Image (cartoon, rainbow, N blue to C red; front, side):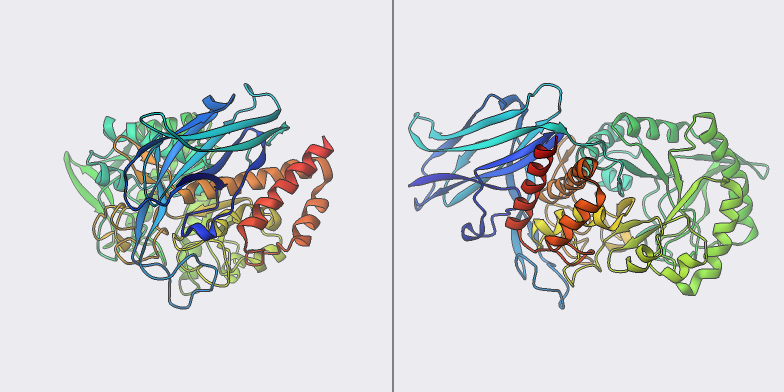
Length: 540
């Protein structure tokens, strides 16, 4: 016997007894909708090559993905909470391969569907999506129908800022291309376009090689967009490559640019690696060996920042650009951070500075404009009405905080949208869109064989997209994250009709309160989102 069923987008097919059958849903214009179809066979071996036929008036709006497994060797830290899908090593559904609908059974296979409603070519109403499973001889095995209602309302434009750090060296390494070559930029477009499609609108941009995730006295592959010359002791700069990078990113839909950090991570102990042509010969002029607060580096920054600000103003980028000082400086380095901040502030005027900074005592010092705060430390920032971003990384793995580890349920990834709306965050940051390296950047990794940065971080933390032959492949986790951002916008749409107080009360009545109190259930999540949709429908 062979049968097919439609299931929710929050299923990873850990086991057939855990899936949530789903036969209908609703969607707004301007939204992507995801759901799955699985085929189950009781045959003892694969005797059939089968095809899943999709028939619908909106067939042209549907993409089909095959869901493939990825390895999990480092699933989580030992003292994690109980809201996980599994413990230990496992191959788990994550990577999505587009437009493959042929199946070989048994015991079961899983396809994923994406419906795009762009608001211009699809009228409101209910649409049937029918699936038929048959073999090459035309023999039919099973059918199933999914109903999708398009509500006559459009999601508001996403104003919530989202950045997931793109690592250019990792693109070049995994695809075997030269940094910033034509081949690189073709791939860069694919990575950025994919990130934008699922809610990213802000991009970390390397003025110089990131001073991030690098062992002290170790170097990452050079990737700097600003060409530097030093002739007879005087600096000059070429911003043409930076301009190309920004233009391509904006063509792909990026709206805000964050310039890479001007001082090293976790305490300002060194300078970014900066390569220059010195009297006609290329060499490294700054790095770990230099104290970034000594006169030599500050003299360089003094000239460089003047030229960079001129570049920004000439192109009208003032409202688009953000600066970084150092990532997650601690109290131990507060005085160094303040000195660096004050120097950069004098040079950039009123332009914005954002840094990961989760200790409220540091924020009180007044040396960051917009802190990006880990979600388990954000409460005092909220209580003091500080404008902030939120982030999670490897350490937000217990007490039910949202994250994107592959061992976690997809609902745990998606819930961040509702939480950020409730908490009033202005943006979200994650360090790894595509970090295909070991922890501290000792060596490149193959993301199809290693999903934990060489055993440094739980699987799924370092990246949320996979390299494709000529571009990039999304993951189930990326879709869940993007759906969470659509949840945020759906709440905003309801707010426009009923007021924020109504929406906040609704969330709290449903059990959402802060960043780690929420109904831990994919069934609840989908039912609640449907409730929001119907409240909007009744109010328009």
